[in-house]
Image 1 (cartoon, rainbow, N blue to C red):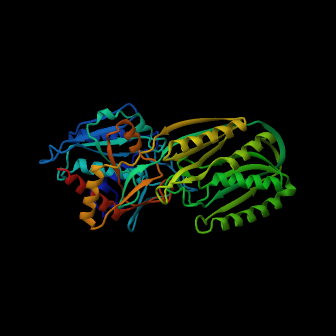
Image 2 (image 1 turned 180 degrees about the vertical axis):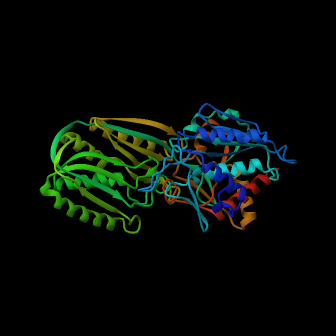
Image 3 (image 1 turned 120 degrees about the horizontal axis):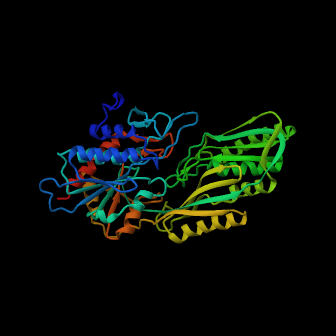
Length: 483
């Protein structure tokens, strides 16, 4: 563990967090983590196995006096969302995450931290390595590729586990027991593009300075989606100063609200000042619209020298801009039974332009299957109308609230004994792997917990050090109460 983390407590938890932060573990690139976990188990003589895609189970026998207690599953995912701040060069395929301790917070140097969900792995490794911890038989499940459609959980053979009580460690607010979550599906829209050579002044426009955020937890916060805003910008500018669109790019992950977007287009040299004036006025209007929710918006415009460019033809351009304007995004429906809960939403997280096609990826979330599928059908209809196609993938079910939960009641009682107040019981709009596991084993009794985190899925991600310690103590107390 580096010097900057040596004074952090619990020391063993942060020791393991520092160790896994050195291992590249973006979604789809978790082989190093699988190997690390198997090596960890082998060195300690703990039974362990990995499946074909890299999910790992490590088991540990019960402490003395806990032999007859029910087996408990501890679970979290090892992959992380990989996003760098503008101007930061970081190769997530091979570079370690550089950790910075700042007061009560742990963060990364210009990138996502990976506290979501590296802290779960650190907790489990700390417990597995500490023979003083009192616990029943443990099955620690480390899943892969959660951030790209819960793929690891979906492929996992749940019959390999004996336990029917599962503590998921993938929540981001201390003092909350999460007991339900939204289901989801991804919609990839592909529109064909035809191009023609035009002559004009090339222009680069960038949208930046936005908060971004988690497409589930933050979708109801009123933040700007850079991809949608770029569609609006292009539509309004084209009506004022006709342009020829070359490309549009934006966002990194469909499960993160995009905080940046850029476009290249060609414009008549005589319209350049008109475009500059429009850009300034447009920026001021949007900042006023989002006052108090997303105030850092900056839109820059840079021009080049007039020359010939291969741009989209008029029909292709119209269809791309129309898609960006009309694609479902943001909150669709609030829950009528749980005040403040987003029931259904969509996030247009990624847009890319190639030579012959435009591709956009959205993540649709809902705690009601019929509404999830309704939004998916809207994408299908829009893509068809525009002469394109849609691929619906990585669908997963909602995790429905369970009326009778022995695990929930035990955790409530432990929390009350520790803090003399009740924890908050919550159903969330984000997706958790518990829904996948519940679909595989309907008798499963699951609760999700986690320490305070801020800005997950963004380079501003922070993990509260003191909260990590309190939640770890709570987790150990829950395990000790299961005799």
